[in-house]
Length: 214
Image (tube, rainbow, N blue to C red):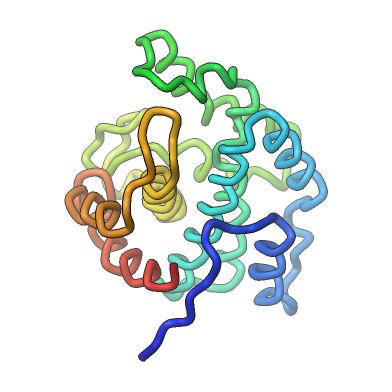
């Protein structure tokens, strides 16, 4: 069966929201304050366009994967929103660090690793954002326990595991200051190689399946 190809990377936030929101026409999409989320993303776009584009891509991939897993529509939407702002803490990270073409120093790496905590802090005043915290806080956790906070296996929420694999894929499939973009084949090889260590093995095959759309 032919799979309809979809433009990737995502062209803009409006197109992405049009893709996600129609599925929830019968649901309460006011659960999250989309105006505040949009304003945060605008700030991120100004501060670091690359992270902004990455956030759009990860949101689409995460929504695709959540749908492939058969999750309820409301959860798909929640995961997409969490993915959109998973890196929002990078607003407070200097672009000179984010764009550094050479290896980060130990001090710079520790600064980078603070972005999930910073993201939680930025959203702390909004009660509607509490459900998004696990996706922001835990998207760098690995099932083998070698992530930022050393959580393992079932300690990591499914929503964060979904964003983790989408995040890693898009990082590889995009040009970065320190390396060129990998091919789709190379990216999928890395995803498979890290099944059961970095990524939940139950998500790997469904994720590979959705990449047929790219």
